[in-house]
Length: 592
Image (cartoon, rainbow, N blue to C red; front, side, top):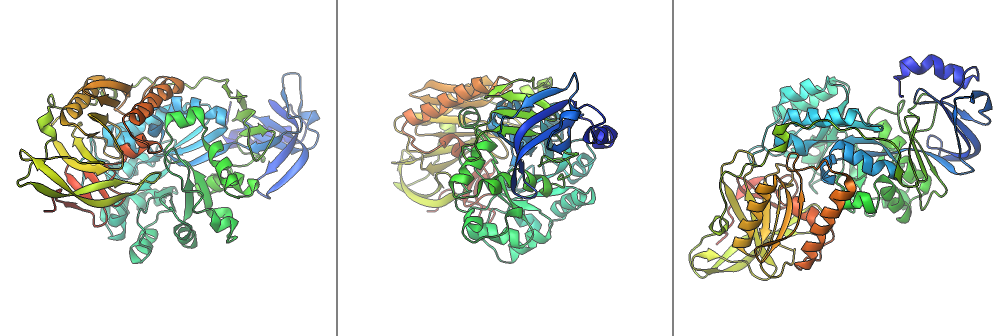
Protein backbone atom coordinates (compact mmCIF):
# COMPACT_ATOMS: atom_id res chain seq x y z
CA UNK A 1 0.00 0.00 0.00
CA UNK A 2 1.28 3.44 -0.92
CA UNK A 3 2.43 5.55 2.00
CA UNK A 4 3.23 9.27 1.90
CA UNK A 5 6.95 9.73 1.31
CA UNK A 6 7.51 11.30 4.73
CA UNK A 7 6.13 8.16 6.38
CA UNK A 8 7.94 5.77 4.05
CA UNK A 9 11.32 7.51 4.19
CA UNK A 10 12.92 5.53 7.09
CA UNK A 11 12.01 2.20 5.54
CA UNK A 12 13.12 3.29 2.06
CA UNK A 13 16.54 4.05 3.52
CA UNK A 14 16.75 0.65 5.22
CA UNK A 15 15.75 -1.25 2.07
CA UNK A 16 18.12 0.77 -0.11
CA UNK A 17 20.96 0.05 2.31
CA UNK A 18 20.19 -3.67 2.25
CA UNK A 19 19.26 -3.74 5.95
CA UNK A 20 15.56 -4.47 5.39
CA UNK A 21 13.52 -6.57 3.01
CA UNK A 22 11.53 -5.05 0.16
CA UNK A 23 7.87 -5.70 -0.56
CA UNK A 24 8.67 -6.24 -4.24
CA UNK A 25 11.81 -6.73 -6.30
CA UNK A 26 11.86 -6.60 -10.09
CA UNK A 27 15.00 -8.40 -11.16
CA UNK A 28 17.22 -8.41 -14.24
CA UNK A 29 15.82 -5.75 -16.55
CA UNK A 30 16.93 -2.82 -18.68
CA UNK A 31 16.34 0.42 -16.76
CA UNK A 32 14.74 3.12 -18.91
CA UNK A 33 16.12 6.21 -17.23
CA UNK A 34 14.11 9.25 -18.31
CA UNK A 35 16.34 11.66 -16.37
CA UNK A 36 19.38 10.90 -18.48
CA UNK A 37 17.70 9.32 -21.52
CA UNK A 38 19.69 6.09 -21.05
CA UNK A 39 19.09 2.37 -21.27
CA UNK A 40 21.02 0.62 -18.49
CA UNK A 41 21.18 -3.16 -18.53
CA UNK A 42 21.26 -5.64 -15.67
CA UNK A 43 19.30 -3.55 -13.17
CA UNK A 44 17.00 -4.48 -10.28
CA UNK A 45 14.27 -2.39 -8.65
CA UNK A 46 13.40 -2.75 -4.96
CA UNK A 47 10.05 -1.38 -3.76
CA UNK A 48 8.78 -0.63 -0.25
CA UNK A 49 5.51 0.98 0.87
CA UNK A 50 4.50 1.53 -2.75
CA UNK A 51 7.66 3.51 -3.58
CA UNK A 52 10.97 2.84 -5.28
CA UNK A 53 13.69 2.29 -2.66
CA UNK A 54 16.58 1.13 -4.82
CA UNK A 55 17.54 0.88 -8.49
CA UNK A 56 20.83 -0.81 -9.27
CA UNK A 57 22.58 -4.13 -9.73
CA UNK A 58 21.87 -7.09 -7.47
CA UNK A 59 19.06 -6.21 -5.07
CA UNK A 60 19.37 -9.71 -3.57
CA UNK A 61 19.92 -8.47 -0.03
CA UNK A 62 16.49 -6.82 -0.22
CA UNK A 63 14.74 -10.13 -0.95
CA UNK A 64 13.18 -11.75 2.09
CA UNK A 65 10.82 -14.68 2.59
CA UNK A 66 7.73 -12.51 1.91
CA UNK A 67 9.19 -10.37 -0.85
CA UNK A 68 7.40 -10.68 -4.19
CA UNK A 69 9.92 -11.22 -6.97
CA UNK A 70 9.19 -10.44 -10.61
CA UNK A 71 11.73 -11.62 -13.17
CA UNK A 72 12.15 -8.99 -15.85
CA UNK A 73 14.13 -11.42 -18.02
CA UNK A 74 15.97 -8.68 -19.84
CA UNK A 75 12.87 -6.67 -20.67
CA UNK A 76 12.74 -2.91 -20.49
CA UNK A 77 11.62 -1.43 -17.18
CA UNK A 78 10.06 1.92 -18.03
CA UNK A 79 8.00 4.37 -15.96
CA UNK A 80 4.23 4.05 -15.98
CA UNK A 81 2.62 6.35 -18.53
CA UNK A 82 1.00 9.66 -17.61
CA UNK A 83 -1.89 11.39 -19.36
CA UNK A 84 -1.29 15.07 -18.66
CA UNK A 85 -4.62 16.34 -19.96
CA UNK A 86 -7.82 14.38 -20.34
CA UNK A 87 -11.50 14.19 -19.53
CA UNK A 88 -12.73 10.96 -17.98
CA UNK A 89 -16.28 11.64 -19.11
CA UNK A 90 -15.26 11.46 -22.77
CA UNK A 91 -14.80 7.73 -22.33
CA UNK A 92 -18.47 7.52 -21.26
CA UNK A 93 -17.15 5.98 -18.04
CA UNK A 94 -16.80 6.99 -14.41
CA UNK A 95 -13.25 7.26 -12.97
CA UNK A 96 -13.40 3.63 -11.85
CA UNK A 97 -14.43 2.37 -15.26
CA UNK A 98 -11.86 4.54 -16.98
CA UNK A 99 -9.07 3.33 -14.71
CA UNK A 100 -10.04 -0.28 -15.31
CA UNK A 101 -9.91 0.30 -19.06
CA UNK A 102 -6.51 2.01 -19.21
CA UNK A 103 -4.46 0.23 -16.55
CA UNK A 104 -3.75 -2.77 -18.83
CA UNK A 105 -2.43 -0.26 -21.40
CA UNK A 106 0.18 1.00 -18.95
CA UNK A 107 -1.40 4.26 -17.83
CA UNK A 108 -0.63 4.70 -14.13
CA UNK A 109 -1.29 8.43 -13.70
CA UNK A 110 -3.97 10.77 -15.04
CA UNK A 111 -4.50 14.50 -14.64
CA UNK A 112 -8.17 14.89 -15.45
CA UNK A 113 -10.45 17.89 -15.73
CA UNK A 114 -14.09 16.97 -14.96
CA UNK A 115 -15.57 20.09 -16.47
CA UNK A 116 -18.16 17.96 -18.28
CA UNK A 117 -19.89 16.84 -15.08
CA UNK A 118 -19.26 20.31 -13.59
CA UNK A 119 -21.46 21.80 -16.32
CA UNK A 120 -24.25 19.45 -15.25
CA UNK A 121 -23.90 19.21 -11.44
CA UNK A 122 -21.53 22.03 -10.52
CA UNK A 123 -19.18 21.70 -7.57
CA UNK A 124 -21.01 18.57 -6.36
CA UNK A 125 -20.12 16.82 -9.61
CA UNK A 126 -16.46 17.74 -9.23
CA UNK A 127 -16.42 16.38 -5.68
CA UNK A 128 -17.99 13.10 -6.78
CA UNK A 129 -15.43 12.66 -9.55
CA UNK A 130 -12.63 13.51 -7.12
CA UNK A 131 -13.98 11.04 -4.56
CA UNK A 132 -13.99 8.11 -7.00
CA UNK A 133 -10.60 9.12 -8.41
CA UNK A 134 -8.92 9.05 -5.00
CA UNK A 135 -9.77 5.40 -4.33
CA UNK A 136 -8.34 3.96 -7.57
CA UNK A 137 -5.23 1.71 -7.57
CA UNK A 138 -3.50 4.21 -9.87
CA UNK A 139 -2.91 7.94 -9.45
CA UNK A 140 -5.83 10.09 -10.62
CA UNK A 141 -5.39 13.79 -9.93
CA UNK A 142 -8.35 16.12 -10.42
CA UNK A 143 -8.14 19.62 -11.88
CA UNK A 144 -10.81 22.01 -10.64
CA UNK A 145 -12.87 23.13 -13.65
CA UNK A 146 -12.39 26.81 -14.43
CA UNK A 147 -15.16 27.60 -16.87
CA UNK A 148 -18.72 26.45 -16.31
CA UNK A 149 -20.12 27.91 -18.45
CA UNK A 150 -17.12 27.97 -20.72
CA UNK A 151 -18.20 31.26 -22.30
CA UNK A 152 -20.51 33.32 -20.04
CA UNK A 153 -23.17 35.14 -21.99
CA UNK A 154 -23.00 32.70 -24.89
CA UNK A 155 -24.44 29.59 -23.22
CA UNK A 156 -26.25 28.48 -20.07
CA UNK A 157 -24.92 25.59 -18.04
CA UNK A 158 -26.67 23.30 -15.56
CA UNK A 159 -24.73 24.63 -12.55
CA UNK A 160 -22.21 27.48 -12.89
CA UNK A 161 -18.83 27.36 -11.13
CA UNK A 162 -17.92 30.48 -9.16
CA UNK A 163 -14.59 32.04 -8.28
CA UNK A 164 -15.25 31.25 -4.63
CA UNK A 165 -15.83 27.58 -5.39
CA UNK A 166 -12.54 27.43 -7.29
CA UNK A 167 -10.71 28.89 -4.29
CA UNK A 168 -12.50 26.44 -1.98
CA UNK A 169 -11.58 23.41 -4.08
CA UNK A 170 -7.88 24.34 -4.07
CA UNK A 171 -7.81 23.14 -0.48
CA UNK A 172 -9.24 19.71 -1.26
CA UNK A 173 -7.12 16.58 -1.24
CA UNK A 174 -6.52 15.34 -4.78
CA UNK A 175 -7.04 18.71 -6.50
CA UNK A 176 -3.85 19.33 -8.49
CA UNK A 177 -4.70 22.67 -10.06
CA UNK A 178 -7.11 24.56 -12.30
CA UNK A 179 -8.67 22.88 -15.32
CA UNK A 180 -8.28 24.30 -18.80
CA UNK A 181 -9.01 28.03 -18.87
CA UNK A 182 -11.24 28.07 -21.94
CA UNK A 183 -12.38 31.65 -21.63
CA UNK A 184 -9.24 32.94 -23.30
CA UNK A 185 -10.90 36.16 -24.53
CA UNK A 186 -11.91 36.88 -20.92
CA UNK A 187 -8.36 36.38 -19.66
CA UNK A 188 -6.88 38.51 -22.43
CA UNK A 189 -9.43 41.23 -21.68
CA UNK A 190 -8.64 41.17 -17.96
CA UNK A 191 -11.95 39.66 -16.78
CA UNK A 192 -11.84 39.83 -12.93
CA UNK A 193 -13.41 36.41 -12.34
CA UNK A 194 -11.10 34.60 -14.74
CA UNK A 195 -8.02 36.35 -13.36
CA UNK A 196 -9.25 35.68 -9.82
CA UNK A 197 -9.57 31.94 -10.45
CA UNK A 198 -6.04 31.83 -11.86
CA UNK A 199 -4.69 33.89 -8.97
CA UNK A 200 -6.34 31.59 -6.40
CA UNK A 201 -4.74 28.58 -8.07
CA UNK A 202 -1.30 30.15 -8.22
CA UNK A 203 -1.64 31.28 -4.57
CA UNK A 204 -2.23 27.64 -3.65
CA UNK A 205 1.00 26.71 -5.48
CA UNK A 206 -0.86 24.72 -8.12
CA UNK A 207 -0.85 24.52 -11.91
CA UNK A 208 -3.20 26.42 -14.22
CA UNK A 209 -4.36 24.48 -17.28
CA UNK A 210 -4.59 26.45 -20.52
CA UNK A 211 -6.79 26.46 -23.60
CA UNK A 212 -6.03 29.10 -26.23
CA UNK A 213 -8.09 28.00 -29.22
CA UNK A 214 -7.15 30.79 -31.62
CA UNK A 215 -4.58 31.06 -34.40
CA UNK A 216 -3.91 34.69 -33.37
CA UNK A 217 -0.40 34.88 -31.91
CA UNK A 218 -0.50 38.62 -31.47
CA UNK A 219 -1.20 40.67 -28.36
CA UNK A 220 -4.25 38.62 -27.21
CA UNK A 221 -2.05 35.52 -27.09
CA UNK A 222 0.62 37.30 -25.07
CA UNK A 223 -2.03 38.70 -22.72
CA UNK A 224 -3.38 35.19 -22.19
CA UNK A 225 0.08 33.84 -21.33
CA UNK A 226 0.67 36.76 -18.95
CA UNK A 227 -2.61 35.84 -17.25
CA UNK A 228 -1.00 32.71 -15.84
CA UNK A 229 -1.93 29.67 -17.96
CA UNK A 230 0.87 27.10 -17.80
CA UNK A 231 0.10 24.97 -20.86
CA UNK A 232 -2.02 24.57 -23.94
CA UNK A 233 -3.40 21.50 -25.73
CA UNK A 234 -5.26 23.36 -28.49
CA UNK A 235 -2.19 23.68 -30.70
CA UNK A 236 -2.53 22.09 -34.13
CA UNK A 237 0.65 23.18 -35.95
CA UNK A 238 4.39 23.30 -35.42
CA UNK A 239 4.41 27.11 -35.32
CA UNK A 240 1.69 27.23 -32.67
CA UNK A 241 3.46 24.67 -30.50
CA UNK A 242 6.79 26.46 -30.72
CA UNK A 243 5.12 29.77 -29.85
CA UNK A 244 3.76 28.27 -26.62
CA UNK A 245 7.08 26.79 -25.54
CA UNK A 246 8.98 29.98 -26.34
CA UNK A 247 6.68 31.80 -23.93
CA UNK A 248 7.29 29.28 -21.15
CA UNK A 249 4.15 27.20 -21.61
CA UNK A 250 3.97 23.43 -21.87
CA UNK A 251 2.92 22.33 -25.35
CA UNK A 252 0.52 19.41 -24.90
CA UNK A 253 0.33 17.43 -28.12
CA UNK A 254 -2.79 15.32 -28.22
CA UNK A 255 -3.83 12.11 -29.86
CA UNK A 256 -7.38 11.29 -28.84
CA UNK A 257 -10.14 9.47 -30.62
CA UNK A 258 -10.71 12.34 -33.02
CA UNK A 259 -7.75 14.67 -32.48
CA UNK A 260 -4.58 13.93 -34.46
CA UNK A 261 -2.34 16.83 -33.45
CA UNK A 262 0.97 15.08 -32.70
CA UNK A 263 2.22 14.62 -36.25
CA UNK A 264 1.88 18.31 -37.16
CA UNK A 265 3.82 19.50 -34.10
CA UNK A 266 6.43 16.88 -33.31
CA UNK A 267 8.57 18.18 -36.18
CA UNK A 268 9.62 20.94 -33.76
CA UNK A 269 11.65 18.18 -32.09
CA UNK A 270 12.37 15.73 -34.91
CA UNK A 271 13.29 18.30 -37.57
CA UNK A 272 14.04 21.58 -35.82
CA UNK A 273 15.82 19.88 -32.93
CA UNK A 274 14.18 21.92 -30.16
CA UNK A 275 14.59 20.87 -26.53
CA UNK A 276 11.77 18.38 -25.83
CA UNK A 277 11.48 19.08 -22.08
CA UNK A 278 8.40 21.27 -22.44
CA UNK A 279 6.60 19.12 -24.99
CA UNK A 280 4.07 16.78 -23.43
CA UNK A 281 1.87 13.99 -24.81
CA UNK A 282 -1.79 13.66 -23.85
CA UNK A 283 -5.12 12.35 -25.13
CA UNK A 284 -7.66 15.07 -24.19
CA UNK A 285 -10.70 13.00 -25.25
CA UNK A 286 -10.78 9.23 -25.73
CA UNK A 287 -13.87 7.30 -26.71
CA UNK A 288 -14.47 4.02 -24.83
CA UNK A 289 -14.04 2.06 -28.07
CA UNK A 290 -10.58 3.56 -28.54
CA UNK A 291 -9.62 2.61 -24.98
CA UNK A 292 -10.76 -0.98 -25.31
CA UNK A 293 -9.57 -1.67 -28.84
CA UNK A 294 -6.60 0.62 -29.50
CA UNK A 295 -5.12 1.71 -26.19
CA UNK A 296 -4.52 4.89 -24.28
CA UNK A 297 -1.19 6.63 -23.64
CA UNK A 298 0.67 3.63 -25.09
CA UNK A 299 -1.13 4.42 -28.34
CA UNK A 300 0.02 8.04 -28.17
CA UNK A 301 3.65 7.09 -27.51
CA UNK A 302 3.63 4.56 -30.37
CA UNK A 303 2.18 7.21 -32.66
CA UNK A 304 4.86 9.74 -31.70
CA UNK A 305 7.53 7.15 -32.47
CA UNK A 306 5.88 6.36 -35.81
CA UNK A 307 6.07 10.09 -36.57
CA UNK A 308 9.86 9.90 -36.30
CA UNK A 309 10.39 10.65 -32.61
CA UNK A 310 13.19 8.90 -30.74
CA UNK A 311 11.48 6.30 -28.46
CA UNK A 312 13.21 7.60 -25.34
CA UNK A 313 12.11 11.16 -26.07
CA UNK A 314 8.55 9.96 -26.68
CA UNK A 315 8.62 8.13 -23.34
CA UNK A 316 9.96 11.26 -21.61
CA UNK A 317 7.06 13.26 -23.05
CA UNK A 318 4.60 10.81 -21.50
CA UNK A 319 6.32 10.47 -18.11
CA UNK A 320 8.83 12.85 -16.54
CA UNK A 321 7.82 15.87 -18.66
CA UNK A 322 4.22 15.51 -17.51
CA UNK A 323 5.15 15.00 -13.86
CA UNK A 324 7.49 17.99 -13.87
CA UNK A 325 4.86 20.20 -15.44
CA UNK A 326 2.59 19.67 -12.45
CA UNK A 327 5.42 19.95 -9.93
CA UNK A 328 5.21 16.22 -9.20
CA UNK A 329 8.66 15.13 -10.41
CA UNK A 330 9.65 14.06 -6.87
CA UNK A 331 6.56 11.86 -6.77
CA UNK A 332 5.96 10.58 -10.30
CA UNK A 333 7.34 10.13 -13.77
CA UNK A 334 10.55 8.14 -13.28
CA UNK A 335 11.88 4.94 -11.75
CA UNK A 336 14.04 6.54 -9.08
CA UNK A 337 14.16 6.37 -5.27
CA UNK A 338 11.24 7.91 -3.43
CA UNK A 339 8.90 8.00 -6.41
CA UNK A 340 5.72 5.96 -6.64
CA UNK A 341 6.65 2.55 -7.95
CA UNK A 342 4.89 2.79 -11.32
CA UNK A 343 6.66 0.45 -13.74
CA UNK A 344 5.90 -1.12 -17.12
CA UNK A 345 7.71 -4.21 -18.38
CA UNK A 346 7.92 -4.34 -22.16
CA UNK A 347 10.03 -6.32 -24.61
CA UNK A 348 10.19 -3.58 -27.25
CA UNK A 349 10.30 0.21 -26.94
CA UNK A 350 8.92 0.87 -30.43
CA UNK A 351 5.92 -1.43 -30.70
CA UNK A 352 5.52 -1.07 -26.92
CA UNK A 353 3.68 -4.24 -25.90
CA UNK A 354 2.47 -3.68 -22.32
CA UNK A 355 3.39 -7.01 -20.73
CA UNK A 356 3.27 -6.15 -17.03
CA UNK A 357 2.08 -3.06 -15.17
CA UNK A 358 3.03 -2.23 -11.60
CA UNK A 359 1.31 0.77 -10.00
CA UNK A 360 2.23 2.07 -6.56
CA UNK A 361 4.20 -1.13 -5.97
CA UNK A 362 1.35 -3.49 -6.86
CA UNK A 363 1.09 -5.75 -9.91
CA UNK A 364 -2.11 -4.40 -11.47
CA UNK A 365 -2.13 -5.88 -14.99
CA UNK A 366 -0.41 -8.58 -17.01
CA UNK A 367 -0.68 -9.36 -20.73
CA UNK A 368 -3.69 -7.11 -21.14
CA UNK A 369 -5.61 -8.42 -18.13
CA UNK A 370 -6.60 -6.27 -15.17
CA UNK A 371 -5.57 -7.93 -11.90
CA UNK A 372 -7.06 -5.49 -9.35
CA UNK A 373 -10.43 -4.01 -8.46
CA UNK A 374 -11.25 -0.41 -9.32
CA UNK A 375 -13.69 0.69 -6.58
CA UNK A 376 -16.80 2.74 -7.32
CA UNK A 377 -18.67 5.27 -5.24
CA UNK A 378 -22.46 5.26 -4.85
CA UNK A 379 -23.57 7.94 -7.32
CA UNK A 380 -26.56 9.85 -5.88
CA UNK A 381 -30.04 10.12 -7.37
CA UNK A 382 -29.44 13.73 -8.47
CA UNK A 383 -26.59 12.55 -10.69
CA UNK A 384 -28.73 9.76 -12.16
CA UNK A 385 -31.78 11.87 -13.04
CA UNK A 386 -30.37 14.90 -14.80
CA UNK A 387 -32.36 14.93 -18.06
CA UNK A 388 -35.24 17.44 -17.93
CA UNK A 389 -36.80 18.19 -21.31
CA UNK A 390 -39.93 19.89 -19.97
CA UNK A 391 -42.23 18.55 -22.69
CA UNK A 392 -42.75 15.93 -25.37
CA UNK A 393 -40.99 17.21 -28.47
CA UNK A 394 -42.65 17.28 -31.90
CA UNK A 395 -41.42 17.80 -35.43
CA UNK A 396 -42.64 21.41 -35.32
CA UNK A 397 -40.09 22.19 -32.58
CA UNK A 398 -37.33 21.68 -35.15
CA UNK A 399 -38.69 24.05 -37.80
CA UNK A 400 -36.71 27.07 -39.04
CA UNK A 401 -39.37 29.44 -40.36
CA UNK A 402 -38.75 32.10 -43.01
CA UNK A 403 -40.55 33.85 -45.86
CA UNK A 404 -39.88 33.65 -49.57
CA UNK A 405 -38.55 30.82 -51.73
CA UNK A 406 -34.94 30.67 -50.53
CA UNK A 407 -32.87 31.64 -47.49
CA UNK A 408 -29.16 32.19 -47.10
CA UNK A 409 -28.20 30.61 -43.76
CA UNK A 410 -25.13 30.11 -41.64
CA UNK A 411 -23.88 26.51 -41.60
CA UNK A 412 -21.54 24.80 -39.13
CA UNK A 413 -18.95 23.01 -41.25
CA UNK A 414 -17.46 19.91 -39.62
CA UNK A 415 -13.69 19.41 -40.14
CA UNK A 416 -12.64 15.77 -39.94
CA UNK A 417 -10.16 14.89 -37.14
CA UNK A 418 -10.09 18.43 -35.77
CA UNK A 419 -11.94 20.32 -33.06
CA UNK A 420 -12.41 23.58 -35.05
CA UNK A 421 -15.36 23.95 -37.42
CA UNK A 422 -15.81 26.21 -40.45
CA UNK A 423 -18.26 29.12 -40.59
CA UNK A 424 -20.03 28.41 -43.89
CA UNK A 425 -23.08 29.77 -45.65
CA UNK A 426 -25.59 28.03 -47.89
CA UNK A 427 -28.67 28.95 -49.95
CA UNK A 428 -31.48 26.61 -48.86
CA UNK A 429 -35.02 26.22 -50.22
CA UNK A 430 -38.11 27.32 -48.27
CA UNK A 431 -41.21 25.12 -48.48
CA UNK A 432 -44.46 26.12 -46.77
CA UNK A 433 -42.59 28.73 -44.76
CA UNK A 434 -39.95 26.29 -43.43
CA UNK A 435 -36.27 26.27 -44.43
CA UNK A 436 -35.25 22.80 -45.60
CA UNK A 437 -31.85 21.11 -45.55
CA UNK A 438 -30.36 20.19 -48.90
CA UNK A 439 -27.61 17.82 -50.02
CA UNK A 440 -25.00 17.45 -47.29
CA UNK A 441 -26.48 20.34 -45.28
CA UNK A 442 -28.85 18.99 -42.66
CA UNK A 443 -30.43 20.32 -39.51
CA UNK A 444 -28.93 20.67 -36.06
CA UNK A 445 -30.86 21.49 -32.90
CA UNK A 446 -29.90 22.14 -29.31
CA UNK A 447 -32.55 21.05 -26.81
CA UNK A 448 -32.32 22.59 -23.32
CA UNK A 449 -32.11 19.72 -20.81
CA UNK A 450 -30.98 21.12 -17.46
CA UNK A 451 -33.95 23.23 -16.32
CA UNK A 452 -36.74 21.67 -18.39
CA UNK A 453 -37.60 24.89 -20.24
CA UNK A 454 -38.60 23.06 -23.41
CA UNK A 455 -36.38 25.41 -25.38
CA UNK A 456 -35.02 24.38 -28.79
CA UNK A 457 -32.46 26.32 -30.87
CA UNK A 458 -32.26 25.30 -34.51
CA UNK A 459 -29.51 25.61 -37.09
CA UNK A 460 -27.74 23.83 -39.96
CA UNK A 461 -24.61 21.69 -40.21
CA UNK A 462 -22.67 20.06 -43.04
CA UNK A 463 -20.12 17.28 -43.27
CA UNK A 464 -21.91 14.23 -41.86
CA UNK A 465 -23.25 12.93 -45.17
CA UNK A 466 -26.44 11.37 -43.79
CA UNK A 467 -28.81 9.75 -46.29
CA UNK A 468 -32.53 9.13 -45.79
CA UNK A 469 -34.65 10.08 -42.75
CA UNK A 470 -31.94 10.10 -40.06
CA UNK A 471 -31.43 11.63 -36.61
CA UNK A 472 -28.58 11.37 -34.09
CA UNK A 473 -29.20 12.71 -30.56
CA UNK A 474 -26.75 13.04 -27.69
CA UNK A 475 -26.69 14.52 -24.19
CA UNK A 476 -22.90 14.57 -24.47
CA UNK A 477 -22.53 18.04 -25.98
CA UNK A 478 -19.42 19.85 -24.83
CA UNK A 479 -19.30 21.86 -22.74
CA UNK A 480 -22.72 22.80 -21.43
CA UNK A 481 -24.11 19.34 -22.25
CA UNK A 482 -27.58 20.17 -23.41
CA UNK A 483 -29.01 17.72 -25.96
CA UNK A 484 -27.69 17.99 -29.53
CA UNK A 485 -29.81 16.51 -32.33
CA UNK A 486 -28.54 16.34 -35.93
CA UNK A 487 -30.92 15.07 -38.57
CA UNK A 488 -32.40 15.13 -42.03
CA UNK A 489 -36.03 14.76 -40.92
CA UNK A 490 -37.78 16.73 -38.18
CA UNK A 491 -40.16 13.99 -37.02
CA UNK A 492 -37.25 11.58 -36.73
CA UNK A 493 -35.31 14.21 -34.76
CA UNK A 494 -38.22 14.52 -32.33
CA UNK A 495 -38.46 10.75 -31.92
CA UNK A 496 -34.73 10.45 -31.18
CA UNK A 497 -34.79 13.32 -28.68
CA UNK A 498 -37.80 11.95 -26.81
CA UNK A 499 -36.27 8.49 -26.67
CA UNK A 500 -33.08 9.89 -25.20
CA UNK A 501 -35.11 11.72 -22.55
CA UNK A 502 -36.78 8.45 -21.57
CA UNK A 503 -33.39 6.70 -21.54
CA UNK A 504 -32.05 9.18 -18.98
CA UNK A 505 -29.30 10.45 -21.23
CA UNK A 506 -26.78 9.04 -23.67
CA UNK A 507 -26.58 8.76 -27.44
CA UNK A 508 -29.05 7.34 -29.93
CA UNK A 509 -29.34 6.93 -33.71
CA UNK A 510 -32.77 6.79 -35.40
CA UNK A 511 -33.67 6.08 -39.01
CA UNK A 512 -37.19 6.22 -40.48
CA UNK A 513 -38.58 6.85 -37.00
CA UNK A 514 -37.05 3.72 -35.45
CA UNK A 515 -34.08 3.22 -33.13
CA UNK A 516 -30.95 1.77 -34.73
CA UNK A 517 -28.61 1.95 -31.73
CA UNK A 518 -28.35 3.55 -28.29
CA UNK A 519 -25.90 3.80 -25.44
CA UNK A 520 -27.37 4.72 -22.05
CA UNK A 521 -25.35 7.20 -19.98
CA UNK A 522 -27.43 7.60 -16.81
CA UNK A 523 -24.83 9.45 -14.70
CA UNK A 524 -25.19 13.11 -15.58
CA UNK A 525 -26.21 12.11 -19.10
CA UNK A 526 -22.47 11.63 -19.66
CA UNK A 527 -21.25 8.41 -18.07
CA UNK A 528 -22.13 4.78 -17.50
CA UNK A 529 -21.11 2.68 -14.53
CA UNK A 530 -21.10 -0.45 -16.67
CA UNK A 531 -17.75 -2.08 -17.60
CA UNK A 532 -15.79 -0.40 -20.38
CA UNK A 533 -16.19 -3.39 -22.71
CA UNK A 534 -20.00 -3.15 -22.52
CA UNK A 535 -20.00 0.59 -23.07
CA UNK A 536 -17.52 0.25 -25.93
CA UNK A 537 -19.71 -2.36 -27.61
CA UNK A 538 -22.76 -0.10 -27.38
CA UNK A 539 -20.70 2.88 -28.53
CA UNK A 540 -19.39 0.91 -31.50
CA UNK A 541 -22.98 0.15 -32.44
CA UNK A 542 -23.55 3.93 -32.51
CA UNK A 543 -20.54 4.41 -34.80
CA UNK A 544 -21.75 1.61 -37.08
CA UNK A 545 -25.26 3.02 -37.18
CA UNK A 546 -23.92 6.45 -38.16
CA UNK A 547 -21.93 4.79 -40.95
CA UNK A 548 -24.99 2.84 -42.07
CA UNK A 549 -26.79 6.19 -42.36
CA UNK A 550 -24.17 7.48 -44.78
CA UNK A 551 -21.58 9.11 -42.53
CA UNK A 552 -17.96 8.32 -43.43
CA UNK A 553 -16.20 10.72 -41.03
CA UNK A 554 -13.53 9.25 -38.76
CA UNK A 555 -15.04 9.07 -35.27
CA UNK A 556 -18.07 11.09 -36.29
CA UNK A 557 -19.59 10.77 -32.84
CA UNK A 558 -16.78 12.86 -31.31
CA UNK A 559 -17.40 15.52 -33.96
CA UNK A 560 -21.10 15.46 -33.11
CA UNK A 561 -20.39 15.94 -29.39
CA UNK A 562 -18.40 19.14 -30.01
CA UNK A 563 -20.92 21.06 -32.10
CA UNK A 564 -21.91 23.19 -29.08
CA UNK A 565 -18.35 23.89 -27.92
CA UNK A 566 -18.54 27.68 -28.00
CA UNK A 567 -14.87 28.27 -27.15
CA UNK A 568 -13.36 26.74 -30.30
CA UNK A 569 -13.75 28.50 -33.67
CA UNK A 570 -15.43 29.04 -35.93
CA UNK A 571 -19.21 28.47 -35.66
CA UNK A 572 -21.20 26.68 -32.93
CA UNK A 573 -24.71 26.32 -31.52
CA UNK A 574 -25.79 27.01 -27.94
CA UNK A 575 -29.01 27.28 -25.97
CA UNK A 576 -28.86 31.03 -26.65
CA UNK A 577 -28.43 30.78 -30.42
CA UNK A 578 -25.76 30.51 -33.12
CA UNK A 579 -22.32 31.57 -31.90
CA UNK A 580 -19.54 33.00 -34.06
CA UNK A 581 -16.49 32.03 -32.00
CA UNK A 582 -14.18 34.22 -34.07
CA UNK A 583 -15.84 37.30 -32.60
CA UNK A 584 -17.45 35.62 -29.56
CA UNK A 585 -20.92 36.89 -30.33
CA UNK A 586 -24.37 35.56 -31.09
CA UNK A 587 -25.31 35.89 -34.77
CA UNK A 588 -28.49 35.40 -36.77
CA UNK A 589 -29.01 32.00 -38.37
CA UNK A 590 -30.54 33.54 -41.47
CA UNK A 591 -28.17 35.90 -43.25
CA UNK A 592 -30.66 37.00 -45.89
